Amino acid sequence: MKLSRKNALPLYHQLRELLREKIESGVWQPGHRLPSENEFVAEYELSRATVRQALQLLENDGLVERMQGRGTFVGRPKLSQDLGMLLTISANGTRTPPVIRVLSLNQISPGAVAALRLALDGDERVWDFRRVFTVDGEPLMLLASNFPVRFFPDLNETDVFHKSLHHTLAEHYGLEQLRQHKEVEVTILDGAEAEVLGANAGAPALVITQVSYLKDGQPFEYRRTLVRGDRCKYYVDVTSPEIGA
Image 1 (spheres, helix red, strand yellow):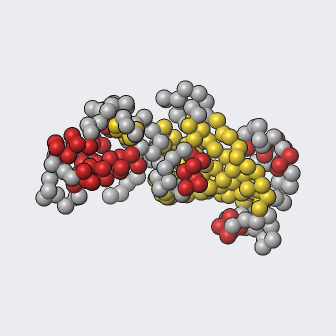
Image 2 (cartoon, helix red, strand yellow):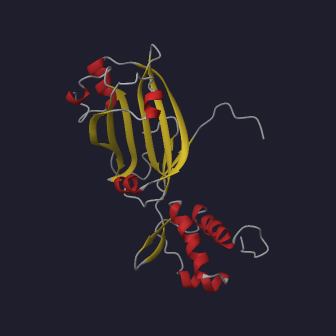
Image 3 (cartoon, rainbow, N blue to C red):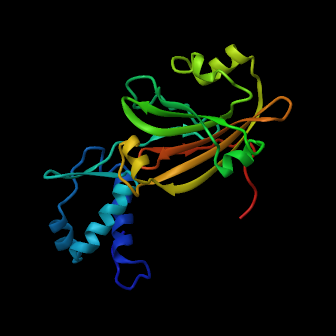
């Protein structure tokens, strides 16, 4: 792929795609040091601002890592996850099992969205349960769950801090969930979210919202999960291929 000033695509976008191709095809392996900005400027006859814009986009995509005083390097491969099983990380490339660390558990008045999704009455309170999902010590997801207090009045006195949430709800409350509804959108991290996840403010992320239901159809959990877009990707295996455009 060559850069063309006759192409409708901006030059920074063309350079980004050219470098992306080298990375994703394996021509440049993880850890490979990219040419310097000056070398890109000279080779492709571009402005420094154009080169920096292309590299910034590649960094946002998680394809390169820029290190102060050292240069720009091809980033680590993204961790691959099944979209249907959000907290199941592929073992490829990981050294240790995933860990979920509890940040806080507090009773609060729910926001408008949580109250709607959980079908709450006007004065009901919820447990606000926040956790961080890490792999090899690296934070990848920020999970914020809301549970109606009337369903789980003593949640703060259970083993939820030391055992999995599913195990605690099943063991302590005999809870059996029937189904979940999940939605996936694209967002960017604000300063507080980025700090928890060890990322840059404004970095791309996926926001996955889900509502879990009991057998009688009552919603019992509203969860909002932020996933680092620079370090994770999702796949879906389809047994009945889509027929369409």
